[in-house]
Length: 554
Image (cartoon, rainbow, N blue to C red; front, side, top):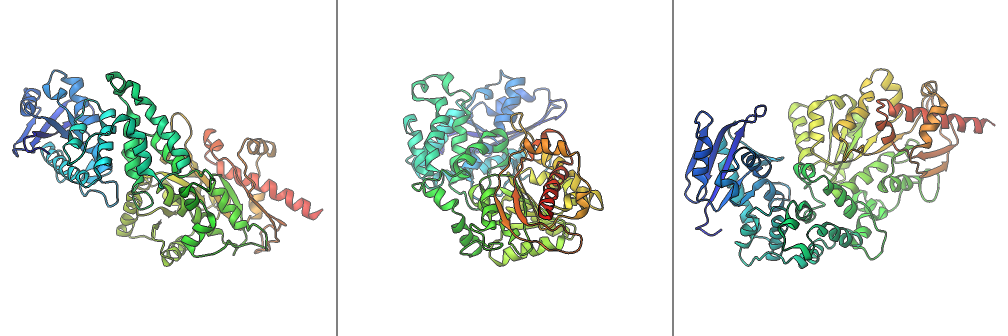
């Protein structure tokens, strides 16, 4: 920026219970002058304001929703409350959208070198700001101007406009050019059929006829949403994830990105949808196969129908014979979801050796965004997997059921968007849930914890259950049939496959003629607060098995 421009970075330490200002630190980028003071000095506010009085721009990390919010509430008379500001928390997703991210960032926090040191934090924020500025200088001027305009609309009291226009050849985008430019830079990265309608909807808050009024631009959050979406879209398909703080502050961004990248328009003219939702093309891309595997020469193959149901967003319960390619039925949709939205798929599996085999087999095919969490891992291995999940290196993770109550695992998973939960060996939900693996009974509670309600509605992710067998013991655990039927009738079904095939398993397995896949809305169970909703699903399944057995006997 202009060498004469005076930028001061500040950081406040505020008591979390009493909400009193404990310490304040500051750093002047122009002169290198520093400032530090504690609450023991009764003039803490006055001296902080004095340090910042000649500033042209106040910066800090999370200054928008923390430092300035506190000062404007508790000391609104201070001059620094009216000085234009810039937040490195806001700038970072635009400047460093691509993984690996900036080394000073971890989630929404700075990587601190000292605890409770606001002066050090102010220095770190200054370093982060300078690096962000250098990153913006490497952008196309037209794109930088678009970012500057969108942030200025969302934060009218800020200095974002000044920051971006200080870059070489950059001017803020005219308001009537926001939509065309956004569509230009997102072309091929989203469903173009839906993009224009969505962008126009978001742009409604700052329509051209209101741009001259202060009221029209105040709290215009949709402009910032457009900026964050575009920055992520430009690196989508790699390892980068939408920042957890962005999803928390602007929860609608996930819905918009799902609409643009996770729901096909089925039009042949849309290059994005044709590339990312073609099952055969993705089967070839990830696994090298030319076609799906049939169970018994059925057309289309049962495997393909199960994959299609999951890709279309349906919950499902699939019973497939051993050797029918059950694992691919969820691995392929999971990899497609990772490519579309960098979302996480969680596979609950009872056998640790099976987890390792799955991960090793995918790695042998060059699919490296996979991992497992179980008790066999060393502390170093476990830490590496958890960090890989958080950072977006791992998109498919196999989880042992005993990990469902692990706080560290739950906190890590909360950092990611969870697209799909797969219950492998689903017959264990009933049998082992009542015997030596009671952790299965915590599955619904676990999901409700890591996927809290959104706008008052349940937010349980898509669920797919897979098994190759149903034990006789499960049959004896049926609940009230009428209650089950009532629950099933309220569910969301998608009949995805039925193949004539005879299964003859080990002693104790049920034999029946029809193979089927049943899709069911598991959110109903969560809304009812049932912790054993999956057991009811299995019980409902057994009533169908009984009917099939009866029909085959007759």
